[in-house]
Image (cartoon, rainbow over all chains, first blue to last red):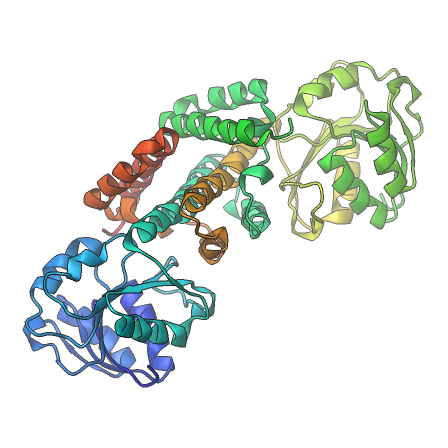
Length: 263
Length: 263
């Protein structure tokens, strides 16, 4: 796949980061498509590729078409492709590969498991990539392409990929919401959020070898009812946070009872 | 406070980590007290100190007595101290300094904001320590002692410390519960938890400068109702996880509406 010819369908965070990483590995990005011409143009300039906002103008000679648009848009974008691409993949965690099956002969998925932000560089060497494809030869192509940018490539079914994506929502999006709530509580007290950073870093670091439930600390896992009650009282003005406090504390205690955690 | 004479009341994670860090900074740990003689002895051996499980046998000539027992036990332990210590502090995030005020003339708090595990070394240089004391001279002593092991020392009131502790519960204990749920979902699919580690690390790293809510990613902040519904359906066998999914997704959307997050 070295020097593969790529068309990027989409110009958001995933398309940008993947495009840049593949470009560095000597792939030719032939074209960027986006509904927004300005957005397509902007990414195309970075990748030294052509661009279009008219899907009927897609070039037809690429080796791989990478559809990196929002989950909702994948099916509609696919319906507008008027030729049979050599190989087409999407990058979604949650959309089944059956989205391709009516129409395309060679297709697959290339799902990079990471949170992509607009202005933050990503080290793909640390991004596991989950792949699938409908034929052996396509799977090899997807694997080779993914292998250019990451050493961690896993074959996965659509069903397992969905479970993985939900796990990622908990591990990433939901832990970030816990940070956001913590930050809100500190802002009210005029305490800088920076004081929590070492704690957050340590918490994330502690679970590198897994066993998160067994490594749980804090009042809920200790079964410290008095303290839980004090915290509830403190949160009475913050009904939403209080509900989350209750439910997550229960979940911690449920895990603890399963693991026989020490009090 | 260099070469301060310390008595540790308690022999758990906080007492152990603090004791070792202070010992390294040339403090003399005179004695370790614990209800459990074996536990007191074990820590005392590491710290080359004496030990006792009889609180009436506390030595009376230390500069600082550090009470690092569970929140529930602080008040009872204090009631058994039969002399007037030069200075006594506890290390709790949530117990008010008024716990001392009936009885003690010089007292304070030294709250290290970190998650302490039994077998994992802590770099105190990255642990913010929150202090208070009832007199200027005691505050100076507590500050000097804390300053031996950490460069980040903050004076704080009991009320603000409680808010900080609750924020820490969200940022640390609750994010860890999100990891535990993610791990459980992966175990069911026989996917190794290690694939989530780069995502967790990146998520924790992204918020080092704060603004967690603005950096939220995922289906909830995008308002992707279809995907949320798919995830709910997937979680229908896991009632507890489904409730958390619903509530945290709502919280993410509430933050997003406040910040006017991009869809």
